[in-house]
Length: 380
Image (cartoon, rainbow, N blue to C red; front, top):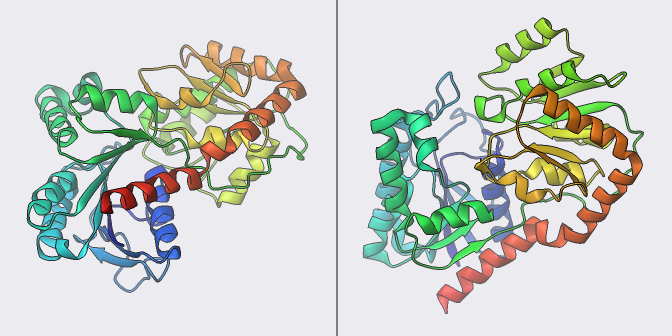
């Protein structure tokens, strides 16, 4: 089959769960003998390589642009440029593809693919990593901008498509936004070792890994550690982003025993998760919560915060592989950390057991198999 993957970012030039998903999808497809085109914005210098399997044909649908504002929010211009580039490419070359597989966000690529499909008839597959609520749209773009954003999202939901979501939360929202066809929930994005083990010496260490943006609430990790009375407790926060200076200032102000080394190689994060007492993710908005699974693979329980936009709570069975707390207040998070410490080795063994029981459905292979089955079924 000939498949076009559409996303404006390409791992590792930008880093995130969606970037990893599309790179894994592209490389799995070419490994099975399919012809894959990856349509994206250019994030690398012209003289540099794009760092993906050489069998994947990478096509740029727009120039190198800064995707985020200083506050960590998406700029408006790049999605418009990308949408126009996708439309131009698919109008000219759409006939060569059996399927076009795109991220829902930024939404203009979905609308572009829907327009181009009228003349070419390819299958349109859309991944909905998140479906934003009306309240979050208002918070993100204000009153008028939020209504426009919500309207565009709903228009994309109603485009005839094969829809994939990565959580029950966002599948329900997509249905509420008017999606008419089948919505398949993909449960797996984990690509690591399936043989879970807990061999590292556990330290009184709290680990956070993620982009330093307001929604991730990394500063709450510092405040929780400062509020805790556990002897020797310390933290490490991996990641970078617009809140980095505020994070460093908070660490200094509270004199908290927390390190913030920025972005580091994945083995460094894995080692910290293996040694850590717990992984703390106080994020208010998650489309999946991959770090919960990565922590569980090391026997490390996770603490996440309940919230209307947080699908990471779907990865937690309270008291079995971690805890879901009601808020990100320092006292409540510190209390959850204390519960993990009290749970000790028994909690770690329950976490390992949870991972072993669910690893097949949590694996990226499980999701990729479902995607490939969809391609084949649509082809007849």
